[in-house]
Length: 70
Image 1 (tube, one colour):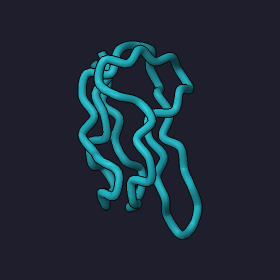
Image 2 (cartoon, one colour; image 1 turned 180 degrees about the vertical axis):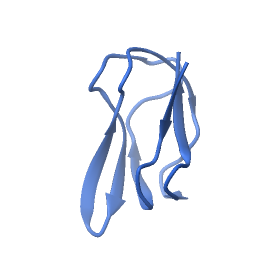
Image 3 (cartoon, one colour; image 1 turned 90 degrees about the horizontal axis):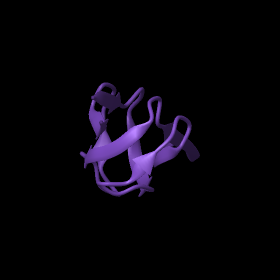
Image 4 (cartoon, helix red, strand yellow; image 1 turned 135 degrees about the vertical axis):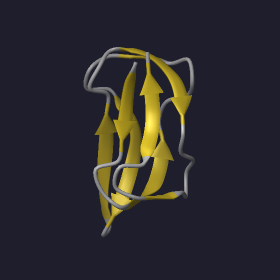
């Protein structure tokens, strides 16, 4: 299992995938917004999204869990 964690403090602008979605390396999982910039969070491992731990509008901190991929 791979855990996808936030690399910065940001707002969750858009959740692109849902639980059960199959992803490849480089697929966008969520889009974060920080200082008026949109930052895509990409899958670093291929697999199936088991859990999405954020929702649109959430404020996340560096290190927060965004998703789990198996």
